[in-house]
Length: 201
Figure 1 (tube, rainbow, N blue to C red):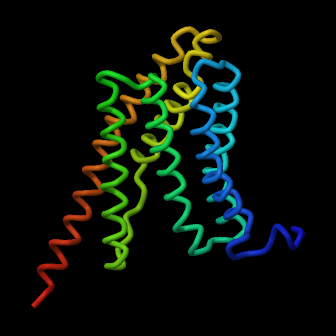
Figure 2: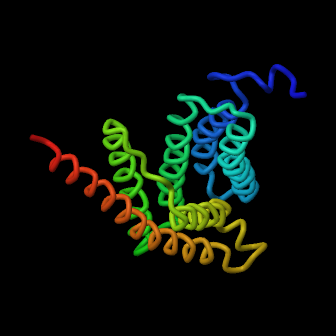
């Protein structure tokens, strides 16, 4: 039997608290990454990022397992993910882990997030849901690990030679999958729009 504090639903359910925590981790990560030459700060950033990434999995799992789905959770969960990714990509450009041609990978990822968010918002008004594909989950996994390697950056290179390069390769892999899934979502959205226009008198 779960304690009442855990079983409660609504805005203060455990899954929503985990989502709030992920959002609060964003300014903490941004502040920490302003000290890119301090190795211990990089490891601290990795620790916070790892916890935030774990909550991304846990909040959805707990919400489904304990029947604690909520409207605010459905709204905030994808927003928290996109805010975290966008903030980290910007900070990694600032710290120099993402530079040169790799900037294009970051731009592709950011543009895809904006495209998919816009499409989902529009399709939601039409009562149309776009399910997450397996390729989208692979993209998320590659992106998740890429950001982890890049967040620890030069501090990680001292422990694992080539750490930053691994992160860059994974970021390009995520960008490639991002293009595929972005087109998939866009194509699905356009198909629904065309069908709706055809039904109009």
